[in-house]
Length: 346
Image (cartoon, rainbow, N blue to C red; front, side, top):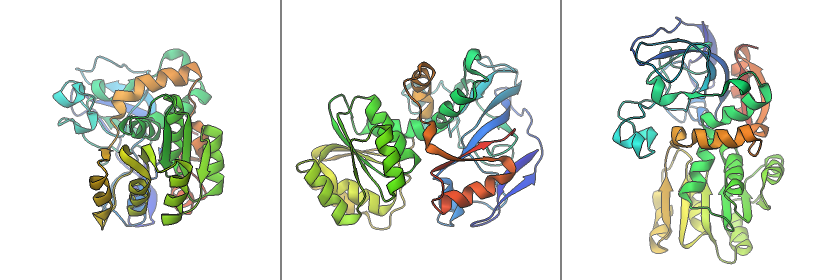
């Protein structure tokens, strides 16, 4: 099979790899039809995060079940499925709490036969990991493109809103105009926020944020952005969604949260100076988040997508085939695309 492989900073290649096979009775083999390039992939692509050379990449898979192990009960060959960015057993203490990313029997995608940007994928813990798409929607391309963000960014944006305690009538401030930030705007709107202020640096993305539900946007940076949000919110917001993970975005989030408010952070933190925590301590602001337990949210959000009340597909601004995945990384790195959709069988 063909798969995207990391060969060093700025170097993603499509290579021939061994087809995956069932190794454990809880495994399933998926023929990948759709996947995506994630903003978090750019950390290793830019050399800002370690990645083993030669490792297959990608963590947002959707496809068709080809084979299952003897113990798999929830899916069978021919089923259309998608999977979160992490695997989970669905039965342990943490899965039962809805903390699937802390499952001791789970793991993140990567390694031989485990990269989602490839033609096939071995899915461990299939019963606890895979989400089955109802048959009537299994070949509806528009629906599939709207469901694909549920593998990561839509559920991650929702997690930010949940951690920030966004409820009906609230004012929410979303820090970040990437795919996760845009999905956080959608999530805040879905939860009933009355005002949604999107903070970012790209006018085209902020325009999309408005189309997705943002009531106001802020395009400034640093202290200027903090002052502008403070003015818009009469002293800060109780519900702040941090969707980048960069030190500057965390500082902005800390600067705009109201005393006693809540920051939901879902951007993978890349911080050298943690001094942004000091004002949070002094203002008794909550700082809650982490990797989204996608499996806990997937069915709830899928129901809304299937009903037509939630559509995160506009975040895909470039479509490539598998051979063009390196081009997709380059487009996202250069900010020419918000998020790249990969149609593997195209």
